[in-house]
Image (cartoon, rainbow, N blue to C red; front, side, top):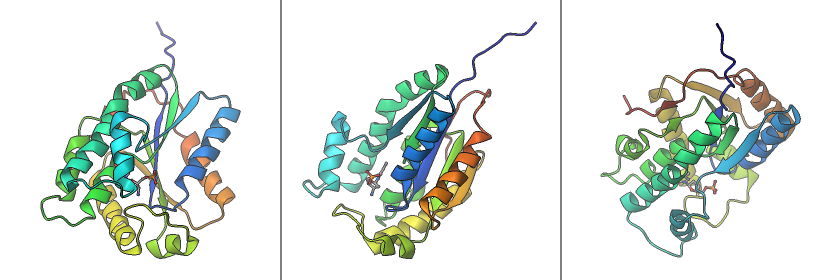
Amino acid sequence: FHEDVKARGVLIVVEGLDRAGKTVQCQLLLDALQQRGHQVKYIKFPDRNSLTGKIINGYLQGQAQQDDHSIHLLFSANRWEAAQRIRSDLSNGITIIVDRYSYSGAVYSAAKENPDLSLEWAWQPEVGLPRPDLLLFLSISSEETAKRGGYGEERYETDAMQSKVRHLFERLLSMNHGHDVHLIDARFPVDQVAKELLNSTLGHLSERKPLETFAKLR
Ligand code: NYM
């Protein structure tokens, strides 16, 4: 007896520093997978269009002040708002490429070095969210991203902050075991990076195991 169950979609997260090239790479990956006939969607966090997204946008653009904890929880709420949709798309066979996720959520807040806001504290509200099948980390130093220029005007887009974020990403990725992390060298030309992302992804496109959720940091 065998049942022909449709494979669920795959949850792919792309992470990295500001200016690492995430958004361009997500677009190229989306195109490449669609050309191969896969059903794929792109989403990004923060989603600035939702109710929480509008508050987050005002904060990032410096129009509003927020307590560090409060804005942190809004970033997390911004993901929880989308969680049910992510689950249902995946179960309908749609693969999702996510541009920034809980990893950015934890490290940018922890990089503020507020003594009451540790990496562990920052991770906690992510516990229970869908855990990606594949995390593609665009690896580049803060010195290299600074050379790319064009840091925007937004909060966090400074050398000092980016370098802390970089170190915290390393710490977080080394702690949060149990899922597939691919480090992709993002210093190379766009096409080359795109090829690596695609190769890392192709091996994961027929996930049959159940979707897991984030656990507490150990
Ligand atoms: N950011 C992003 C956070 O501080 N917490 C989060 O949970 C997420 C998803 O927002 N500098 C920060 C990282 C970025 C900024 O992201 C906006 P983008 O990808 O530039 O729109």
